Length: 446
Image (tube, rainbow, N blue to C red; front, side, top):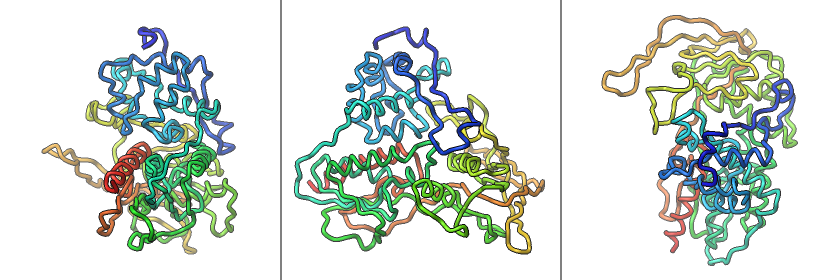
């Protein structure tokens, strides 16, 4: 702990975002960066707590106090080495992680100003790439082969860790490029895809083989491998099977997000295939991060208006006594996409989609709901109120999460990782799961 009083004398300073009028014209990353001297000051705010709750809260077990101190002392390569010990892809989590570590930071509990851990993490890995600290490594081979099915964060993490242990790793994925939802689901304005390509190129240089555009049947796994890792994520989105679901203009969120990312990568689509919000009034059903990503994408495509509805109550701002630490704080989250313009409403359920005589969506009938607390402390009960209205729109995006996949009974040498194992969760948890699965595979094959 280089400066024991920095948390008192130096206020929290975030890197900020590009101006709204500028950023909605393109899909470049929204978040800006601080200069190196300011970033060092931000790292100095870490108090190196005797019990570092940030480390405890991180699914990866990142050693935040150690690399914060290294940054403060200008030892960027040391900081990178400490960070890389626990996190295979800090360039991903440094951009899109909700930062469970910051929610657990003592400064967050004391003065509502946690250390800028996520931004500092991103600065470390970008500095490492710029300065050449990140170099492909070669590992002695042990003669055994492992197939990883799925090239999302968990599969890639498992591949990195197995490769380090000497296995010949082949990663299969049905998409034309690696990355999973990080490539096809996260908008470029949050994470530019050169970041993903830079990492997978490094993985190839380290001896990991990729076979892309290949669909693998989990019940007919490719032969010739000593073990298999199933990291296929949660491919099935939660649907809203109400009257009018078949109308033109009702889409899953990923139909919009994935296609837009593919367009930015150079893929062409016919006009009849496009899922585009230009000139439309858009309704996003679902109040989570995927819904937020839809909002930002629709703005950049030229939507006339965007409304987001959520079936749950509006959470409080800043603090929620119902979810005290160490619970995840259920508080109102306003993203950069919300700031760009969006009508947000809560406690609304959707009754039916309304269309015209040609089968085109024209609106959605919604109804207010109430949530009745359970007397035994269990889940609250939803009650409809009869207060109905129609929200006019000509595009609906369903962003209500994903269904946990069901799997057949696998052989003993087949392991699950990431969302395929736990259901939809955070990228940081997917990476942690990939690392654990790699260790399980290694123990099994030994």
